[in-house]
Length: 92
Image 1 (cartoon, rainbow, N blue to C red):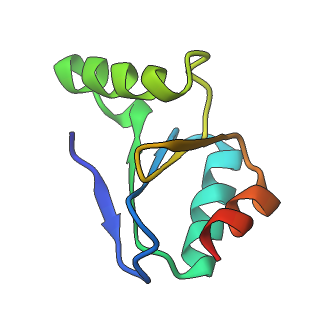
Image 2 (image 1 turned 90 degrees about the horizontal axis):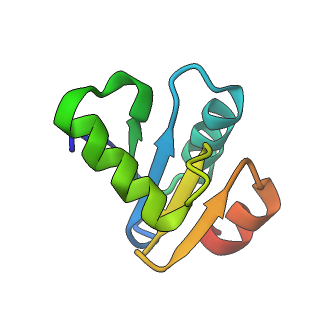
């Protein structure tokens, strides 16, 4: 998977699965950047073929509804949707 990396404070392994056309996904990415945390992200809609299949399987492990944004923290916690307070609570 071709994840994009954003430098910042290491608060654990943070992965954002998003859509490039989704306003809530953009707000979530901007919030992570404002918090200054290190994270990886991928725009699922910009993938294709096997890569897309693999990314979708990954997202469905955490979020069977396959909705976006999906934030996975340390491979054990998941936040689905733009939940500003919950994201801040987990990462500040």
